[in-house]
Length: 487
Image (cartoon, rainbow, N blue to C red; front, top):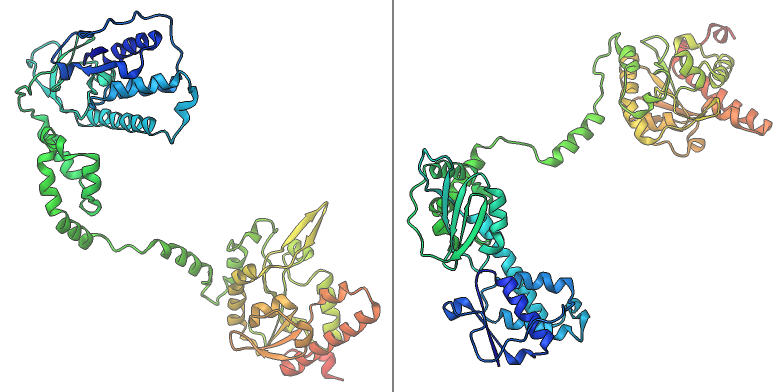
């Protein structure tokens, strides 16, 4: 039977050397009794029966075990050395054991490793230094008392050395004391809690802690999980915690009562949606055209040359609404001057409609197209673009005050009545528009141009001419061409 007492200082290297020697000598775990210096009261490293085997050749073990052992040796469990050596012994024949998550002994060691890491973090977070040196000393000196859950001071000395290299310090624990002076760290036996002087800076820290405490987000269980109560007696801010916790509900209610009344986050989306459905023009004066030309309500303005406003008398008995400007209209800045506009002018004259007395415009004010080589191919506006632009159309209607509106095509019908479906069935009928106006549905002249069958084109043109004649008769002499009135 071999008995080994591992010291508290240099524990990792001491256990590693002993375990290597036993493993090389083939000593099984049941033949080794491991003890800690904390249990033996300072006994020698190998102060028991049974000679210690001489360390032979090196032993290869997985790196993951080396890291695991280098942490677990600082655990306070008295069986930690025996558990590590038992696992090391098993690794001789099962080198892949370190990846076996179901192994109960490995799982226990990993749990101990996690506890040591947590204790190391708590020491870094909760050690509080107090100044003990003379005010006129060339180098400031500090001391701290801490009671860690495990033997983690030794593994933390590098952190404190690098963090507080500009001062001398001493950290005292019941088991080990670390002293940093002249750039070197020395480890000694533990000591009782020293009498540390009051620190004037603690009052400033306590004031800061009170001010950053948020009573509305208080979660006592979460706070005590991260700041266990056993550390409170050494933390200056702990004196304020009971008071802050007790007064948190009242302070939270007071904060809520005095907080500014802010709209919920969804209100921003609702307000943006509302802005898209509110006209950018509320007047009916002469500045309407200028407002339309500066419109950026939808992305169509990015590619179009310009916005094309309506044309005609501001007070008109008949308003004619098409779809959108075409390529020619986009370049000229006037509605119905391209091929479709020429068809409209020709058929309107045949129907006895005087264009000069009609207000002509489009449901959408910018040209929507797809570039294809040197050409710009017309694209029908979608419902969202019609929705964005209908407020300009409404402003034109409010200014013109027409008795009848002629909707040419599906897009115009959508903007004026809310539906752009079944135009061929609805053609020639008068419907009630969304603003209460009478709307006569007809074809768009560009439809006539697209018909490949000459006979179908003639029939559609006749229907279009008939609709224009109906519009002229419905609004009376105000729009009938003089030549038509003489017939």
